[in-house]
Amino acid sequence: SAARSQRNMLSLSNEESIMNQVISHVNGKNCLDASMALLDIMRNGTILPEGFSIPKPNSQSYCLVASALSGYGTTFEPDSSRALRLFRNATAEGVAADGRFLNAVLRCFGDDVEGALAAWKSDIGPAAAAQEGRSRGGGKTRPGTNLMAAYNGLMHVCGRAIRPDAATRIAYAMNKANVEPTEVTLNSYFAGKRVTMDGKDDNVIATKKNLRLENQYESLLSVECMKYNTKDKRQSKDRKIRIILSN
Image 1 (cartoon, one colour):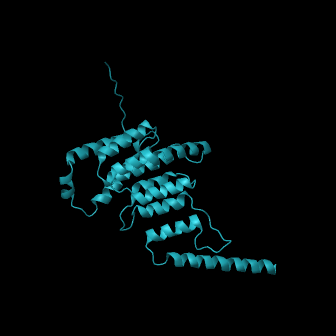
Image 2 (cartoon, rainbow, N blue to C red):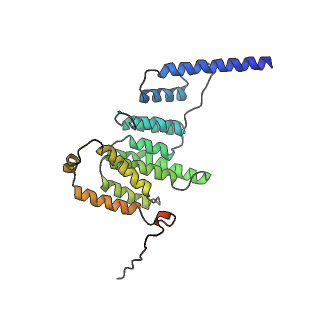
Image 3 (cartoon, one colour):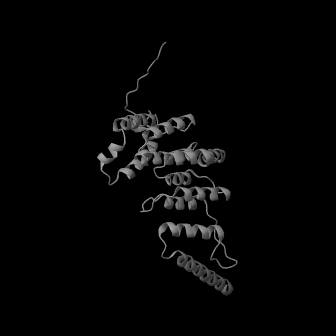
């Protein structure tokens, strides 16, 4: 009993020592650099005494770092190149391409719609689809959950760029992939748009874009994302009509 108590005290002392080393390693760093430093410690075991180990980073760990890279809640500009390297490192280490992680990576593209779409085609889209297949097999998440979260990241980028035309095309692509866009999808677009509009003169932004065409595309996007849903109680009193087309 005394020996066990001594071992426990020694273990606590070692844990406290390790924690102090970790704190000193990130002390004085901004949130982005601190998160990257912590991820490095988890990946490589740096600064840890010999014989000690800590859990390897999982999808949530990478998601938090990607969120820092996106500049969310900070004054930092999004860093898409570092985010894409982060994603590729996670993939190489066998970390699951969770939809929330992919969403955070895509948000790192800021208002770069073309860059985000290129990354989707080359890396993120295939990873999201592959993870969706694994999730369905395990039965842990609802079908479409990971793909939906990833697509919503693309929608946020479209909102940042105030590109409802691109957002509408993505909504069509979602339907084609059997992932029906929802109100959350629409809100992702407008959340991105609010980031761009925040603190700016509406008239200045309007001069750079055809406001009428923008409104038309946003109306189309709203229709595509707010289709009648029998499971949505808010729509229970909506009137439904059937349109029959004949030659």
